[in-house]
Length: 475
Image (tube, rainbow, N blue to C red; front, side, top):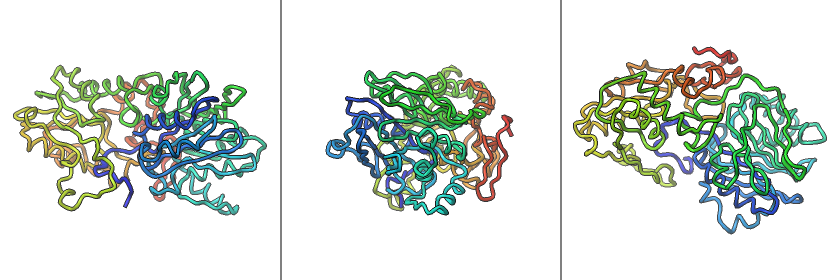
């Protein structure tokens, strides 16, 4: 059994959130704590902070939410002027303490700490090479593979070692790296996972999302470019091209679901993009209705955009219990059968006799959507029309998102009409790939849309899966 197992885990889950702070004279561990708190949505299984004072590196990490892992007592020893932090949701590697991050070890060049968001598609090959060279591994995480590769690489400085890693690694990696006296931030050549740079009065911050910068009073400066290495130490900040940038392939799901609405990605406020996705879905799939509602909380913004574009009233049809999502206590069989009622309660007074347009951001397995629709009908909804602000999810992700397997993805097994019938909705409409890309404001070949198209940004080999490299077309 997983600790903190999600009771209703229908949506795609993000891999991790990463953070790095260089701020002499500041309590960097405390700043990192609040930065990780702002990134909690990106991972809820474990959290950790590593710090360096220029002589000694220290680490505290444990299973659980940020607020459960850290307290005044265990933050106190984390003294230093640079820190890295991590929130984890497991994609590769089980949910256990050995896989919690950051990783911290001693190398020939001194202490090395690493926090990683993403997934390497050639991690099995890299892992095999390390084992063949006698390197022992304590976890099943590809993040430990990266740490050991950096620790054991040739090169007399960390920049050379990071560059050598970037030559060999294939896949998604946004990383913060701690050494004795320098904070590094590294982004893969495709820019698959987000990473940004911010300025404090006394130093610098890097984070998966800009919302973490705002939380600790840092000014958003820019996004870290694909293939870029940022080095921050007493000499200031330096930008190094670690690897030539490849075809850009930012994960489209950052805009659809993963990122916090108040984050800025590629110059756009995520909240506004999500409203636009709702509006575009309304334009593509018009239907008569009496009210628009969203599946809380992730689809609320898109539902408001849909309602505004369709000139229909927006109202709540479901109330979400925000504290039931992750728990040590497993529901018994009776509670499992209640299913959605553990997480949502309907508002019959808002639904009775109404033609309801339900907006959701995605349908993965369909395990939650069906019971929600049944709840709405039982509460008196006259008609239920489901609108999804992403295209059908037909393919798994190999870039650091737990998106389910081909067999588990309902849109891989069924046509849209079959899904409509399976979910017992009157009509079903998905946003088109073209509508998604145009609303995000990026050409299709600047986004990773592989979970919709099966066209991956780089060649994938995963058991019986062997996909060709990204060419910018949509299957």
